[in-house]
Length: 170
Image (cartoon, rainbow, N blue to C red):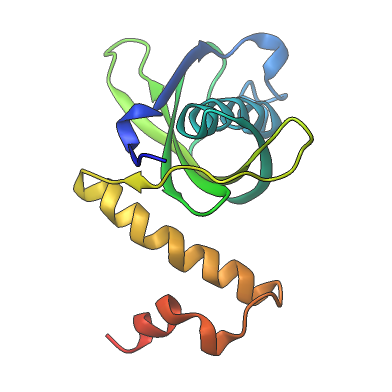
């Protein structure tokens, strides 16, 4: 299986925030944004693996800025690292100023997807090749985040979390 570049699966989804997608303060519902991010991440995961992919976890979400009614919202999804059957997808959410057109980062999230076969069993996926400095930073961080998650879940001994241990020995 040939390794793939991050850019090969990058996904951009742009849409408007409509009245039915907002709360009483006229800002986008958090759940609406989560759904949009899940769809974008799922497309990126499928592009990378060329398999059906299912959401395994939402590892991190930061709602840093409200997204007002009428905003143009762009969700950018990129695979940050692939493992044996799973992949971490990093999402950046941008809002575009109505008058200037300047884009500002509003939110970010990290999802994990698993590639499966027709019977729902996990299947192996290609390795990922990060190219930019940001892709390399996220690639390294993904292993640390995975190890931390496994330690917290009791699926890995802290002494086996070599990437986490290395953080404290630098």
